[in-house]
Structures are given as structure tokens and as C-alpha cells.
Length: 246
Image: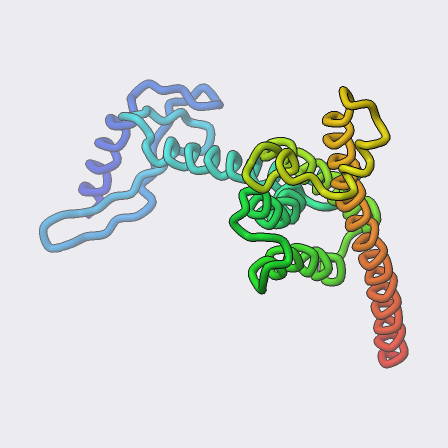
């Protein structure tokens, strides 16, 4: 049996490379760390001493695959962090704010295209009220460090989106170019005929900004009050826990 181990050790040294110098200047020897004997063969696991170089017999596919997996994971984390990065001046992530803006646009677009007429039925009221109900739910349920700025900026973005939709669909079948509101007509009458069309555009943009910013301010107050109530309930529960622990 000893001769078998000596033969296996000599073969391991040849496989690792004879004459390779270790950290102390002496030739490296590979230790036989385990031997498993079967009926027809022996399985030997060899490991070089610490500090001895190991000859690479081919590409290390396991290391390459691991490195690729780590890079893909880091790339996914960066993409996710960008999506969750808050909008400027707010504590609300970009994806959430853009979603809250977008859900308010279908009612305006369908009304401009005369698909859903204003105050025509259940569908119109659902499209008109569902976005603000969602805003209220986010204001009450979501914790934020900047409740006022979150919804003020949301209201500004919503107002800008309304103004853009009105201008894009100005000449649509039910757009303000063909069916201006009574308030816009009365406002335009204060200007000379050459500026009346521009006055109607300006009035429409002004109303859109007032609706958006007013809605944002209203929901901002709700979010601020909800945050105060949440903070008080948390403090009271902490006091109850501390008194119970005593």
C-alpha cells in the first residue's frame, strides 16, 4: 500500500510540474489529502501547499460564469436603483410619481377625442375620480419624509401633462379649438381679435395649471396630516411597549 501512495504522489508531482519553486525556495510537493479505493480504481484528491503556484490546464469556466453572474446582478441593482431614485425635491420614486401622473390622462384624452363625453355616465366619473382616489390612498398609506413636496411636484407634473394634452389635441373633434369653454371665450373677448386665439390657449393652460397644482396641494395636506397621525400612533405604541417592559 505504501508503494501505491508513493507512486500516486510522484505522478501528482509530475502533473503539477517538477522544479516549481515555492515561497521558501524549495521544490513544491503536492500532498495526497485523500484516497478512496474502489474495486477497480483509486480516486485521489491532491492539493498544493499554501503559496505554491498551480499550473492551469485550461480555461476556468466556473470562475468566468461566476464573474458574469455577479456583473449581471450588479447591473440589475443599478437599474433598479435608478427606477427607485426619488424625483428632485421629493421623497417619491420616479416610477410611482409618473404612474400617478399617467393614470389621470385617459379621461382628458378620451374627452378631447369625443370618445367619452364630459359628465356622460359612469365611465366618465370613474376615469375622472379614480386617479384622485389613488392619490389619496398613496398619501394616507405611504410613509414619506416630504409629504408636501411629494404632492406639490406631482400636481405640477399633472398640470403640465394636462396642458400638453390640451394643446396636442387642440384641433380634435371635441378639442378646445373647436369647442372652447365659456370661460375661455369670455376671457378672450377682453383682447383684440388678433390675440383672441392666443388668449384662449393661455386661458386653457392657466386652468390646467390651477387644476393640477390645486389637486396636488389638497392631497399634500392630507399626506401631511396622515404623517402626523402615524408619527403620534408610533410614539404612543413605543411608550406602551416601554412601560410594559418595565
